[in-house]
Length: 154
Image 1 (cartoon, rainbow, N blue to C red):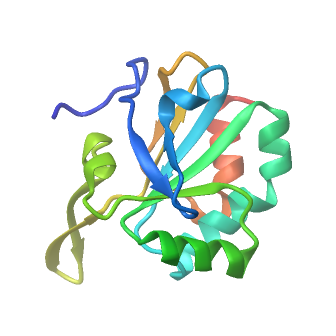
Image 2 (image 1 turned 135 degrees about the horizontal axis):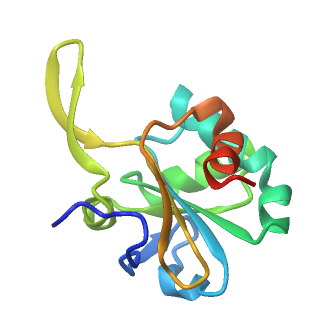
């Protein structure tokens, strides 16, 4: 699949969230969506990113945003992650990596000289019509909300 670009329509998808319900990107037309991809529940960077978005959720919602996280973790893992950290937004379980691959968030990573396939941490800001407004590939996990605001000039 070709790499997604800002200004293109975001690929629609459906995914199962922490409580077993299925949601689709198209369910959120008319709202701005922060769709963020992260490697693993309850790891330091992923926890920092989720907590930062959660701490700023009221402001994000007031600005018209919906936050949705996606990782390969199970629904049960997502539920524990949400409960442990008091998260107030949905997390999609993508164990078969269909959504991750659709958004070019699954690929080759390097750590200590070792190469392996894994989740590429990135965030897509999708506008009310379903177009990709911004792609953030170098995520600042501890200050992600401000990073999003700065990228969008808001």
